[in-house]
Length: 279
Ligand SMILES: C[S@@+](CC[C@H](N)C(=O)[O-])C[C@H]1O[C@@H](n2cnc3c(N)ncnc32)[C@H](O)[C@@H]1O
Image (cartoon, rainbow, N blue to C red; front, top):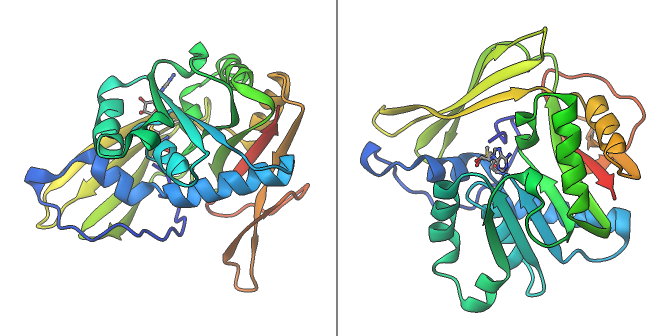
């Protein structure tokens, strides 16, 4: 959902003209928001950095159409993935798109589970992740701590849990970002922010070739969590160490894709980063 944060992602998806009649919100979402190859590479890199070994297994919480789980398993013949999501129709869409036409060997290495991320379904993995801020559906400290404890339980002994976080002074201002993807336009709307509760309401809309629109294709009713709150709750949930990372920039202020762990940093209009917790 939130590659919307001006995350510069290279998309290798073949260009395809989208008309209203064949527009599918999941397809448009995957093409405009997700970068499963990039996510696979960074998750493996972060795991190696903190664990000095190769990661084999991934748990993708809030997996939606499970594109990351599938790409993870595809990326190496020893890798396997578990994707968990509450929404059966979305999981089945992902199964049809990503798993139906692949060989049985790869198919065996991806397990999709319909259920709540709090329920502890499935085997333990090296890496657990909740990307694109999906954990923000938990709006109280108790609820988020409970989720983090459940995620910790599903890691192997030296497992790591990876989250992304976002913020900046622009995030709390109602606004709409538009970005062209192939021949459609992706819109990320930050519709409302409540300064008393930190609740934030966002939408994804799509504008198709010819001008037809799919308004509110996806709605996100979240709490905006700060990195410091995430860090505290991860520690309270039992994680041993938590690393709040920040992307290094070059002389022009552009992101380099290299993450370090400063103690303090400067705020920006919009930022996006990773938080890594060691079990
Ligand atoms: C925006 S999607 C995230 C998709 C994908 N992870 C990504 O990075 O783009 C959020 C998903 O979280 C799922 N979800 C919300 N609450 C959940 C819960 N408690 N347990 C499992 N899945 C949940 C929804 O069904 C939805 O598919």
